[in-house]
Amino acid sequence: MAGMGNNEISTRLEGKSAAIVVCWLLGNGCLFSWNSMLTIEDYYVNLFPKYHPSRVLTLVYQPFAVGTLAILAYNEAKINTRIRNMFGYILFFISTLLVLIVNSAASGEGGLGIFLAICALSGAFGVADAHVQGGMVGDLSYMQPEFIQSFLAGLAASGVLTSALRLITKAAFDHSSDGLRKGAILFFAISTFFELLCVILYAFIFPKLPIVKYYRSKAASEGSKTVSADLAAGGIRTLPGTVLFMFFQDEENTKDPERKGNKQLLSENIDYAFDMFLIYVLTLSIFPGFLSEDTGSHSLGTWYALVLIAMYNVCDLIGRYIPLIKCLKLESRKMITIATVSRFILIPAFYFTAKFGDQGWMILLTSFLGLSNGYLTVCVLTSAPKGYKGPEQNALGNILVLFLVGGIFAGVVLDWLWLIGKGW
Figure (cartoon, rainbow, N blue to C red):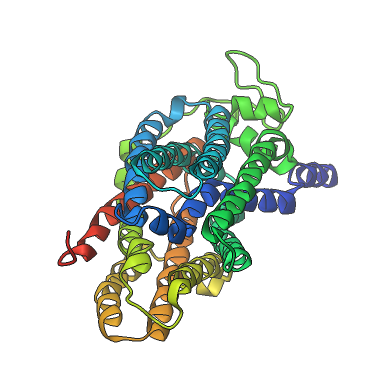
């Protein structure tokens, strides 16, 4: 009997490797479109030289992301997770396709109308990100830590992939007429295809993996009402008005226990929430605006900003894999906070390096910025949900992503301070 029970549990947990790969790809899709827009800043700076696109597009994106995510996080317990995430990925696909169309129609001509259209699509990316990033982090918070780590690594990998693609397309069209525009159009064509792939993965592949069905059923047995559509997509039916699930049918597990409210979860994890906020306040006050416009002239010329952004993205990705080595993972709440606050020494370091240092030091600082950003993000988001029930882990994941996005918004606003004394 014990052997049969072990075999049954083993069957339920099949598909872990596939789930990790799909989570990585879905993480990519969450930021692939937005990183695409950030990575072609050289094209937009050339097209709209008077409008500071590297800063304005990010500033437009963030209010939509923060506002939408605040509403979604507040109502998390009532929202169908599947519809939320599907809406986000489909909106990413449609918006990326429209960016491709607008850039093609512009024929290399700038102007206020085209810039406003790009800004509107930037806002649409913010709405899509709020749906997907909060929804997926919340959804994965009650599954295995490797899943959320893989999703977060995918977020960083999207920056690496977009940087690599941008360097390739820039090199391919560097000496042709209208090369920047041709490279940007090819770039967004690839991005559009990738977003369509993510829609298919989330809709048809992810919900049918045995291990995903297992954890969603477990969350439902603990009182979660947001996973019913995902369970149905995976072939698990629930009976109206009951909590009857394929994997958890004993009386103890089918109770509808009370879950902690958002206020209580926030009060118990206020340090983690502020850690997330401070990590991204610092990062976005430097990346990408400062790196795109305020690092001076160097021997790399127009390649310099692209190299800096690529180095940040690569090191951010590496940083998200370091916590997989247990001896290198910070789990002490106090130490995570100390490490987070210590990063603020990078602000004077970047200022003086831009003013007096050479490009080697700037590349080194940018690499450390990315490495520490990715590392601390994974440490917080994999440590915080421990000890909670599925519905509470989902809610806490949404709350932490809200603080993350709030930090990004604050960082984007503070990024404008670098322009003091430069005509603004």
